[in-house]
Length: 331
Image (cartoon, one colour):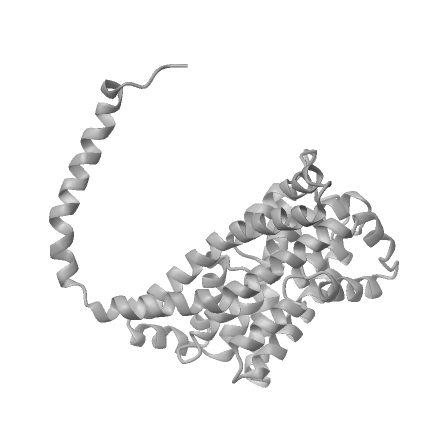
């Protein structure tokens, strides 16, 4: 191994030292130009969203760990009904029993498909599981305490979207969508195998992994949301939110980019209540757990590209139509 000397580090240290010196000179003058009121609003907004969402992320991670440790895929596969309609209903209700966040859903479903679970049931489970579960229901209720109709609208639309996509895939997709090279074992299985001698230790190891995995997306989402709330002019948000189409497109794109966990996205959405319509917020709450940036990458690592884009098109189209109709009729 090559020994690192001070001479070899010189080309790196010189520009870094120069940059630090420039920042030392420039930052004080920039700090004077920044309105401290904006900083205070940003800090308060960020901490408020983060502290409200974090307990639900922790609960979701622990419940997910218990599922991975105590429930085998073989046992779950035996419970699947043969009838397509009953199978879709069964998949929609799985989230009530197994509240797994979308971060851990795709590796679990991949193994279930490999063990014989029909594709359409697996997709319904991927879409509905992160929303139709007690943890997400409680988090959404806490975030929209004064607007309980948003809670029921989110659960109802998620059920309709998941069931509709399951039926469409059942009728239209016949080939195997899984990629050929799926021999690697995911990190969850590795941790549980390593610590099988201590089940309690296994639960906390897996839960810690999930919290760190989800926490970075949560913090990024809270930072972006607090930044928008603090530094973007209220008139600009109101102009976007007032549009019949732009408000839905913006919030759906926002949900995709933020990649928030379903146990915390409701707290972010609730901060936009005064700027956006209830229907566009509903689109944010339903689309995000079903399709976001990190989820898209995970889907592409497991399924063939053609199938992933087909699924993404179905999700965006049905969520948009469903949110517009629900926002106009119910909310």
